[in-house]
Image (cartoon, rainbow, N blue to C red; front, top):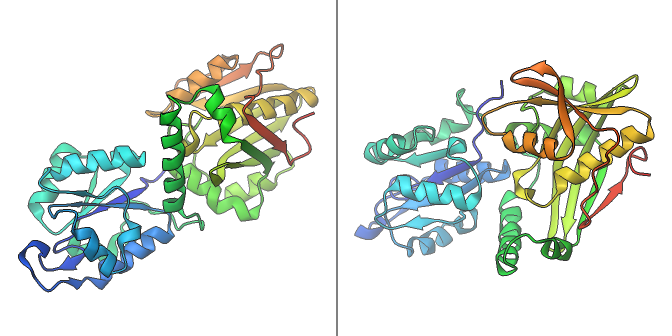
Amino acid sequence: MKPRVIKCVVWDLDGTLWNGVLAEGDSLRLREEAANLVRALDERGVLQSVASRNDAVALETLERFGLRDYFLHPHFGATAKSASIARIAERLGVSTDSVAFVDDEPYEREEVAAVHPNVVCVDAATVATLLERGDITIPVGTGINRRMLHLAEQERQAAEDAAGGPSEDFLEGLGMRLAVRRAGSGDLGRIQELMLRTNQLNTTGRFFPLEELERLCAAEDHVAVVMDLKDRFGDSGTVGFALVALTPGFWTMRMLMVSCRVQDRGVGAAVLGALRRGAHRAGARFRADYVRTKANRRMYVGLKLAGFSEVGGTEPELLLEADPTLLAPMPSWIEVRDETGALLP
């Protein structure tokens, strides 16, 4: 079973990030253990925000403490903290079960827990040990600056909204370039991060320990690929992973994961099309494992629309096979570069 992963931490300010109450004119003192955690979480790729009873002037204090840039979509005012957290999660594109909330007031923690029982509520007095908790996992990080990726994604979303939605014309205008390449040892950390973080666009929800993952990526009877995406807004980095088992007459996709950051852009369809073409070139039929979870129905629908049908397995673990007479068209708006030398003609 995958451990519960924290993707976002929402902070209170008074008595939590600093000692003192801003609105009462106190001489504020930054809590170094909290500030150190903010920096550590950022290095690990955890998004962060603020839910505070202060007004937006608190941003000036965050700026003075050198912490302003760490917080995305901060919420201020008398709104219930549970409502602020819901809005922050929506803006950041994360589910509340991947959110932790840090506050020094028991009342605020209880209010949030009553509305969002799946949010991890943390007493500000214990922040120094947050990374050591056994009931949650905070990935060690892969060097990806998620704050910058999110800001670039905001620009994409604004452009999409201005265009009236993700039409083919809009997607064509993104200039997407997808490189499909063999997974190497330097990709293992990012692949594990995708396994931990990716729930919706994930065919199986499986999680492999590092040693097993390394073995599978190097095995001659498997094809393990990662996908790197760029567009006119910048480099999105490695946005997906696929693992295919090779047996006589069959290629069986054991897992396909695509970051939710690039949903609705056709990345999954592009890599699935490339893999199916690879199997066709090898004279093999193409199959896919699908393990039903609470979050991944969208992947099942996508496979069915791509011409897959159930040929085996028992709920929730199913085996699907693609119609060998039908090769689904590749999305016209993505330029796919096959760096494996074994997939596209």
